[in-house]
Length: 183
Image (cartoon, rainbow, N blue to C red; front, top):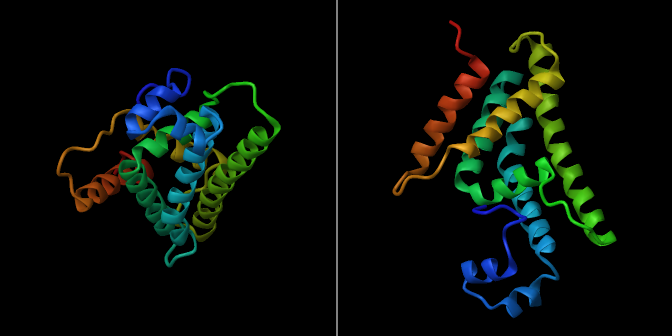
């Protein structure tokens, strides 16, 4: 999270987790394998938090708001994992990959695409039920997720910030993104 994939070394990782370089290599074959593990855990955590809202009660807009708030709360609570997922989306960890690594990365990218499709489906539901205005659902989904994910550019948890405060901040951001600035 701090230096990005390219600038981070196994020595940095070992130091930050209080382990030896050998112990890190005992559990992971390479820095990229650590990246894959963090990417996978980040996707698991966000999906676990957001997915229940996709099929929950309410209109498409109600569900989209709940999903978006859950996504942001996850981002703010698990910022380090989110940074790893964000790096994957931007294609930062470009390296010569072994077949197993390429396959694992493709599988994780499919999980991320499925996550985006879950949002897309709820946007379509909202358009169909009239709770969202008629827009291009793919454009709306990508714009919404891009803006939700951009919060990682400026958000840093404040010492003592409560879960209620995180939820309130997420709700206010989502209100701006989905409700807009107009009356």
